[in-house]
Image (tube, rainbow, N blue to C red; front, side):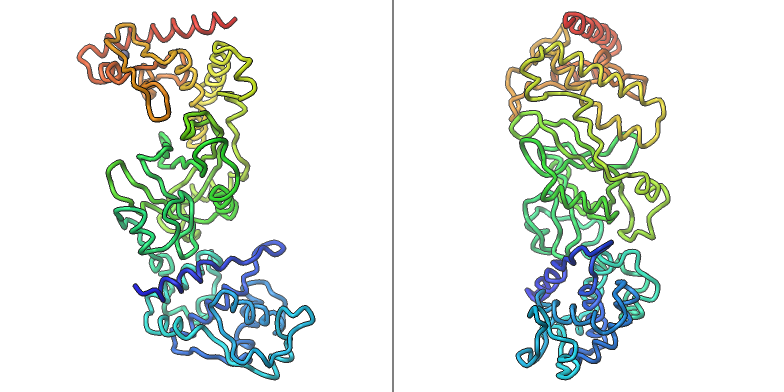
Amino acid sequence: MTDGVTGLIKRVGDLAPAARGGGRALHRPLLVLWAVGQAVQGHGEHRWSTVRDALTPLLMAYTGAPAGAQSVVYPFWALRNNDLWEVAEVEGLQLTSGGRRPTLSTLNEADPLAGLPKDDFDLLSRDTELAARIASSVLLRFFDPVPTGLLDAVGLEELLVGRVDTSLRPRVGEPFTNRDTIANAYGGNRVLGITPLADGILTVYSDDKGPYADKRIDGTDWIAYTGDGLSGDQQMRGGNKSMQRYQTEQRALRYWHKPHRGQWTFETWAVIVECHRRWGRGEDGQMRREYAWVLAPVASPLSDAWPQHIIDALNDDDGHVHDHTQDTPIEETEEAETLSERDRYRRLAAAAGRTASNRSERSRRSEVDRYFRSPAAREAVLLRSGGTCENPRCLGHPTELTDAGAPILEVDHVNELGNGGDDTPESMIALCPNCHALKTRGRNRRHLRATLLSIARQRHHAFARDAL
Ligand SMILES: [Zn+2]
């Protein structure tokens, strides 16, 4: 891949039309599509009058622009600022009173030549796969679902019909050793978790070794994806703002995943079906509010290929953040100082109880809700444990702490959830890794479970009662 290709993809990917009225002003993306279609057919330079006559009806039909040649002036002039368009002999053109662009009459009179930069044209006219890839990314970002007749109108029907999604790069399943090799091949930031590739399509990265537990939500194939921000309350800006925009616009993003010791893989396209705010532990070990998005995998990024249950989920989403940080007060900063540990325990247990009693209906949505709210039960058990294994016959809890300064404890359901275990503190227990292994794999696990269940109940009642 030459710099020319990377640069061209990035310049197209950087196209960011301003929001206008009810939608976005798509004049420039449409001119790019038309120019790519022309390049594929070997046409690189165009008189203003040619562009004007071709674009006037297209802008009306596909961007809702008013009738008339005036609407072509804007993209014809402004696309130059994206380094994707050149106009010859601009010195002689008379500008509007604001000086922002030439007048329609001066363009009609001078009829200047214009077109893609020469190097870009050479690349696109020689490499139809590149042309398909670039045009597809523009279609996905700005014209999804692709309107009837658009491909034909911009001269891309033959190249792209039925293969907009498969023309995009990277392909699903492509593995990479690290973020640098991804960036070298497809551009984009090398560090951020939520960031577009060079083609402008949003991409999220999930590293099993990283600070966040992004995972599949039980009972669904949906993914809980934690937002940007390592410590302190996460804010709705940067990557989180991009996620919110994709959620509102119902657009597909790329989900990359790296299993522990594995490779980065573009695992699936996904759409955002919900946004939650929950308590989590930051990199500094402190509790904080974080955003989490529910991603639903889809086989194709094109919305007309999505299955009905995804469409339903998108339509059900009101776009509001489901805030679980009010319902499950884990560590309200001011209150934490005045509340005793036992008062906090009672509040967490109550929040966990409300969640558990709400889940009679085992729909996908209630699974999601439970997934986000169950941290209350977990936090309560940790509080109750005082930082040591709750197994009374523990042979030795490790004294070392985690990187985050937390005790090495696993909070576990005494009976697995599938076997009727509840997501409430009285049926959960904090165990050191040794005791956890005994409970899951030990020969006497059946007996141990019975003991642990009664211990959990005793400790729960003792803790809750003492709080009164
Ligand atoms: Zn133990």
